[in-house]
Length: 193
Image (cartoon, rainbow, N blue to C red; front, side, top):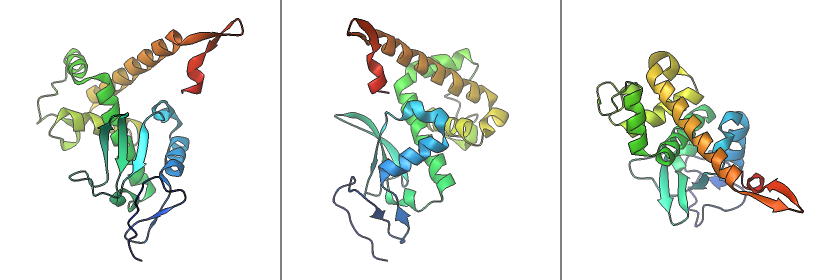
């Protein structure tokens, strides 16, 4: 089957990937992902695009930033993997967004409190060489195969505490956005989340 270069990532319907595998429209795929992983629904606010590029060193997917904020780019190689691998890759990329939202300096402080040295590349989980990739892998494992809980319990606690803190920040933001509607307090954030 011939590779069809698409001009825009958001073409309705389906995009064809080079090996002839059918790649679902990004919106349909992400909707299915969040149905398979309902505990990750708080991250549905992350924009996801399907890109025709190669992604440089990130062949399957990458976390990007533009004038509208953070987003995840899924490259053609992503669609060539089986669904389970796609889920693992996508969850790993969500982990990058979570780390970015939490903040690197806050993460380093939290890691020190938990007795983890994120600069010690020899001790990082899953053979990673930097703390951001180690966190993203730990995040994916925490929500996927749960191997991080058995092999690297300190990193599992880090994932849990980072997520808990972000949930607290979102809850505070939601409470601050309540507005009066017909004389009653109405949560304005419901339309946003």
